[in-house]
Image (cartoon, rainbow, N blue to C red; front, side):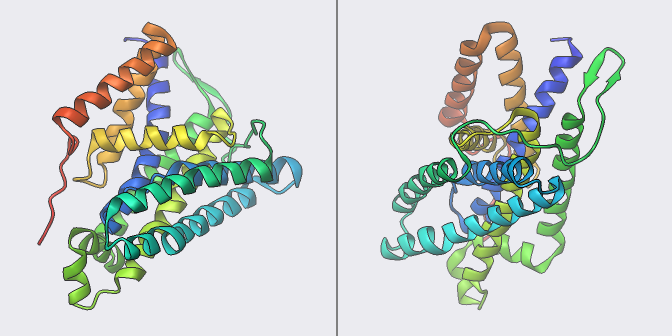
Length: 291
């Protein structure tokens, strides 16, 4: 485990896992709900950005902007047309809404496949950073873009949650929905903020990562699973916890695959998930609810 190239690869994919986990985290904190459609948001945004660049000749920045707008719109629609009505009809029960969102996940994937095609798409990198060498390590421009995007998104999100009224209200609603509603907080509006920002982060994650890996309509499910596992590992106690979980999961995937092959990597991820679900379901950093 002394090869710096492997550590760079682990950090790179870990950053992507962390961004998807952060997208899920915001809805957990702001709406007390696991939104498993975050992966499809990322996939749809990346496919739109790639399709716009290759088929329409749209500049990459504009295509990425369109992808982020779509991510936000689809996330808000998920809350307004799926989660909120199902929770209202079921008396606030979480399971029916989870089932409905899972169905939404597959619906988004199939719709993306029908619109953008069922073959993999390449996505141009947003930042024109040339590949370079850092000593013996080969660094690609797309890797730098992913890491810079992760640093920027996490910094902006943490500052937003801690220093803005909307961010503080979001945490208050997630901590105690009924108490927040009693004191006059616009709970529905705050939940829309949670889903909207979550969709924007997921979209950005998909766009910057797809420049490295490409994207296809089936990517959404696997991206959701890895993001969810990263959140399970990191926990919801701190806004930077998804970053810790994402990087740790990235290390497991890269080093597991290097030493034991693809099957060994999958087994290692499964064992890590099993350990956390069984012995540490709250993750490394536990959420403290204010009442």
